[in-house]
Length: 509
Image 1 (spheres, rainbow, N blue to C red):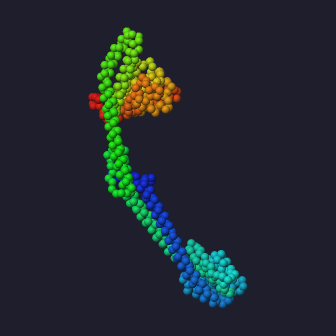
Image 2: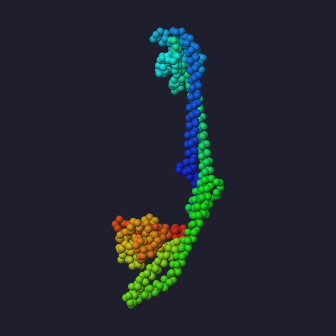
Image 3: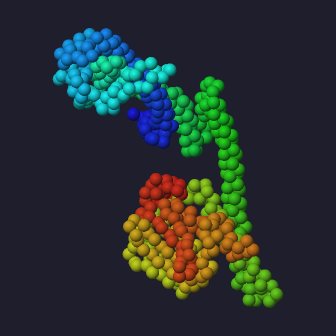
């Protein structure tokens, strides 16, 4: 299975994916439609089945009461009622009959078509009261007694119970018809409608999947193209076909990608030209600067013998020449980082000795408190570590004042060096910019002894090792710069890390 296919499957299975939402929406629409249609169909069929069965039974019962029960004597015997109930049930479309009369006032007698199936206890009391109630005669009502019916359930089986009374003192009759067959038919219909609903749901999901595939395939191709574009493949283009909205989107993407490629190419060319200009300028400045520096050093040696009016100018020329020389060296170092030609020359280093050597070479021993145990061995580029330490400690001495504390320790696979001063700290609005090139904390003092590149170069040297530098203010006052480097930068150098290619076996750059 290809990576693209796996990514597509994972994207399709996410609940937030467009494919899943399309499937869910289609399924919900189909479910609502199918359930609504099935519910309406079931309700209509149920009413039709029950009404047809009910009307047939009630019409037949009314006719039987008129033909058979009305023919009984005014004071029928129990046998008369029993025989009449049997005849009515025998000629009925599947219902049982109960006839009730009075042999004497207050002495009711009853006849059953089937005593085991239908007794007076099966007739709801509310129905009995309705049947026995004499209706007032009006212009719209010509009969004292009417036929009433009710659906009930006996032992879990649905039944239709109806009753009426013969006008003029005749018997009262009740019928009981089972609706179990109709219930079974309706259950079968419900199962059929449920299966149809499930099939509709499955069909809608398949249709949604097909629709999603049709719609999302171009979207997926557009997403893959955008991903490649984000990875730097600016020549990525889409094959456009059709005239729909997705085709217009693809054409817009192609135009955007083409414009972006052109702009990036122009910017890269300008950046390369600018970088080459800075490198060439720095290189060309080195030769005259070397001569100027030599002359400045001679003038500095003779400054004490010069005219007092000229000596300050000589000292100014000497200091500015050294500053210019440092700036040129920093610019050349920056161009090497920008061009990707800076490389690591690794060696096994005792960190305590390296920090001590850095401090001693710059005559800072009296101004720096070092907390470092000997024997902490790391593998890194000692020259670049010296550059980092010189910039961090020099910056602390210049802006924070002595004493500057330098603490060295090992945490896991990392080397940590903290440089802390006792100055006023770094303003909060300056903290995010302390490692920016040529950044000055005060716009009113754009000119200072530094070039504004020291901390930036220190950060680049940390990055080439696979490390980092952070700046913060200590709660006790002063600024704290924390350098984090891997104890062994061999993997960074071997894998062509942030600085470029690894050195050869002899450590040549």
